[in-house]
Image (cartoon, rainbow, N blue to C red):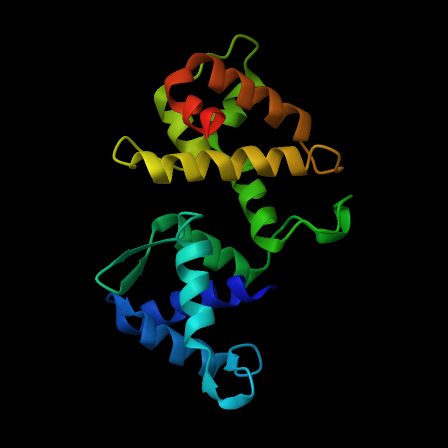
Length: 197
């Protein structure tokens, strides 16, 4: 697991303890106490790397839709909780099955989410599948309330992941690419944000 995975797990565990929103400082201390070798300040092993954890929370975990932030407080989304639980339990997609060794664990989890999506599984069963808006929202992990910036970020995450795994031997790669084309063709107003960014 990489540091972003460990921070997500730490946030999940801390939220389970507090049952409330957490400050960045609380997360930094908790992650440091849980994984001191990973999150100490460079040159000062007795202190947490607050800046590094802050950067990961805002630049990576929030961008992936794992959490929400407001007034320096952090709360996991339902998606983030699912990802954390999968990390804790270990993903069912074996890394040894990957053609590209540079695919990270959170990308594997995202791929697993796509394969398990209800809309995609209906697409596999029906010859003349026509997606509805719920299928699009589930596939990109967005909703009607997702703001334009976050929506663009989620669509970009999915699009870049599918490009990355295109040459891998993961199951359903070709079918997922076709499913994405079907969704984007029907719901151009949603997918155009990523294509124009």
